[in-house]
Image 1 (cartoon, rainbow, N blue to C red):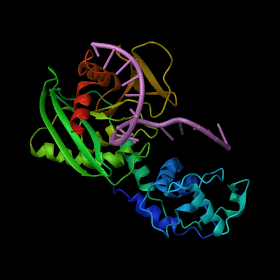
Image 2 (cartoon, chains in turn cyan, brown, red):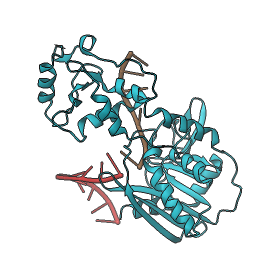
Image 3 (cartoon, rainbow, N blue to C red):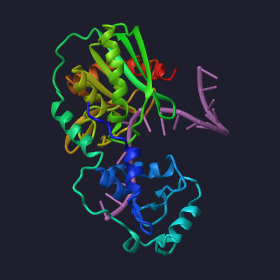
Image 4 (cartoon, chains in turn cyan, green, orange):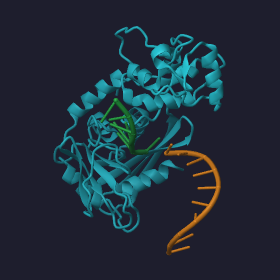
Length: 319
DNA sequence: GCGACAG
DNA sequence: ATCTTGTCGC
């Protein structure tokens, strides 16, 4: 795995550098972290973090110059703070040309840069190839969050033929990394890997793992199912309940391709029970058609919308 | 250029 | 993902 940066600590440090009388936009801060697409997370941090009276988080605003939200819930207070620091307003919005601020470029990589590099390594290492071994036991893994900052991972191992449950395992640990679309693996993989270590010690290795999340169905071909598969060198399948990227052709087919940059990166599967599809993609060491086939084989169609391993892991993670 | 974005 | 309130169907 890669070293996981402490994003709240980085932001706390960085925000101190914004001078009084100046502001930065959520997106500009995210860009310095290494990826603009984390702008929403920066806004989320601005809205809820460990706040102190001397915290300069009021210097974060929207790209339009609108103030956005404030930790205390009172945007008026944000406005008063900025005005008392001399920030220039026009039409109730911050004049970013006059009051916007950027740090001197220092050439240092942001905290997300190393994670992007890790995703590149994963996408290079992913094997989209036929299964090599017999599949006797399948597993489903998922996480729930019983309280803020604490995750509970669950793994359910099933007989691949009968879908009877053979073993269950749960593990609870702090989860310090936030949820950011495309960066799910850095939030949930550490806990899944420690759960895997426990499985190995018990000699309970499954042959194929269903992961609640995507594999190659990811803008960088490095979803959590692929990261897990590469890390533990096991076949994995990604299953998600909503679409992260790509487009699906209109139609009533039970199986429709997910297209992204002219490539098929997954399959949208629609059951008879619900018009809302779920999405299957290759994690590691399996082909898309095999993944879809094993998905159908592990699907108690009449009972649940999702394949049984995922359904059971989801259930277990919540208790 | 802007919006959308797994759990 | 979690929370919360209201509604629907078995």
